[in-house]
Each structure stands twice: as structure tokens, then as C-alpha cells.
Image 1: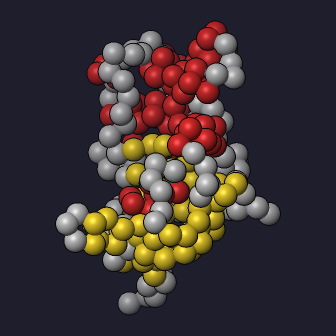
Image 2 (image 1 turned 90 degrees about the vertical axis):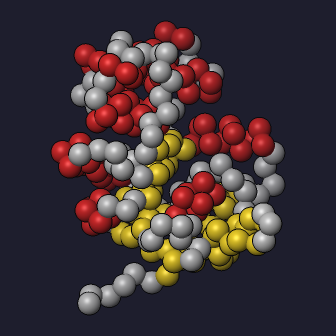
Length: 229
């Protein structure tokens, strides 16, 4: 089985004004149907790793493959298209456009990809919102919705182009326990029932415990999972 995400000795550094290593020699494989949590202390490189996996940043050394495609030599336009087609993002701050309705926010990436007509994009957005329990909220703007509802809209948007990969950066960080549980259950369903790879950066050990496995990071490196105390 081809891994949906594979990195080989990926390193990312910043030089401003001195060298800081964000991700150091990261090697990992994530398969279809896996829900994986990335955990570790603040500043250890979790989000930096996620941005490399999501093609939002480029490594200084090493390689990233997405669904078997080597991304190293791709142009910015090719990376953008691959990201739009194969990867969905859910962030701690949902980044919904406040002037658009929930349905229009979800339809936006569909229109950007350009495979469906406007009416088909709207139908797809409405279908996704209904699946996430938001059928009655489709024509509301984000400022008229609860935090949990906004995050479910963000998940619908992430699913808009039927990506094989869902990446979450602290997606439950602003939610109460009930909404956190709903989001985690949705991530489990996306992995286990729909066969997507779901990777979630989190500080929440309850979220991490619900994942199929955990990737532990420390000082930019992937380290073994700690044993029982």
C-alpha cells in the first residue's frame, strides 16, 4: 500500500539572525485510514512539520511525497494545485471568510479547483454541511454561528475537494469538551470509514489518546513514544 504521506530525512531551518532548526531529520509514513496525532511541548516543531506535510513550506533538505508524488521539484503553482486537490486543512482559528455564508465558504475551494460548475459546487457544499449536521446553517455567516459550528464548517471546507489527506493544527484548541468530542469522532470517521489519512497537531492528551498512533516531537526531532512511568 502506498503511503499517503511520506517524508525522508526532512529538515527545515530558519536563519534570522542565527540558525534555528524547526524540523530535524524527520522520517515518517502515514497510511490511508490512519488518524495520527502529533504531540510534544510548545515550540518543538509540530506545526512546522505539519506545514511541510501540507506543502505550505519547503524543506531545506530531505523529501516529501504526497500520495506517491515526489514534491521536491514541483513549481509553486504545481504545489498549490496538488494541495488544493489532495489536502484539506483545519486550523485552530477556522479562517472562514466572515462576509460569506457557510455554504459559500465551503464552495470556495471547489470553485478554485474548477472541476465542477457553480451550481454543482453549491450542491456539494450543501451536501457536506448536511453530513456534518449543519443543513440548517448553510446560509448563515460565521459570526452568527457557535465555535463548534464554525469548526464543523471548516471541516466541510477541508473536505470540499474530496482530499485523501486531512491536516489539523490544534483544531480543538478553542472548543469545549462536548465540541472537542464531536470533532474527534468526525476525524475518526474520516480515517476509519472513508480511508483518509488524518494528521492532527494537538496539545490535548484526550485528542491524542483517541488517535490510532502518536508522533512525538522534541526539539524538532521525532522521538520514540514515552513508555509508562
